[in-house]
Image (cartoon, rainbow over all chains, first blue to last red; front, side, top):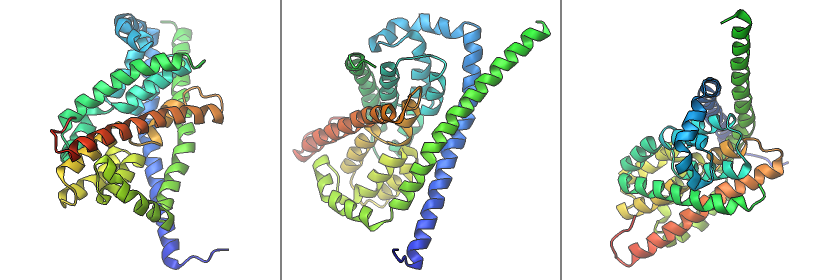
Length: 153
Length: 165
């Protein structure tokens, strides 16, 4: 048995508490976004709104081998956050390759309003980074969709 | 609308809310232990040794050892949490604008490597193996892109050329 000093033990305890707080905070944010989003998606689907958005967006979403309906999580992810994007996925019945394509696109560019402001505040050039992220998101989406499709997923 | 139809709609909405709550529960089972592990491991000597090893190597991607802590925080916790470490380092002028730009490039390409990809990887993943495969793809692509872009940017910056974004 390794003997820990009092300080080490206190540091570990504090770390565990901080991790727990941070993890639970994340889950609480997630919960507040996910439950209403699931309900809203259900309602929108029932009134044919999702299908209408799908028809409208299918030409552009085709670039990424995604159905038009996937414009909902993509735009939510880009503009709002990753949580709201992920919360809409359950209702759309996408394949693994499509989920991974969306995951990469939204992973590269999300919550662009908040994160650009943070990077700007840190002294980075926010506008340039924003253009870079959006460009990368679109380019990676187009490439990944084609590579992942042959994945059997 | 008849009472039965109303009940059916309410039942369906309750089902949707329940599905949302279950998705959150599944995520909590993975995110909370991951965050605790990170916070417990971060002050350990092993982590400090890794930081010392990594520090000098950051020069190749245009950063000095002072960037280690904000880089690690942003990489694991995300830009919003990482900002708590990034902004003070920038304000104390421990690092120059060029390095901040490299850091920004790296972190805007790849950050929050636990939380963000998990949200997508978990949707309809049948087992842990498939979950791992999805996480590897989602994290691997972003990490590779971040390294490639900062390496390229660092080389241009070292040559004293105008900074490409």
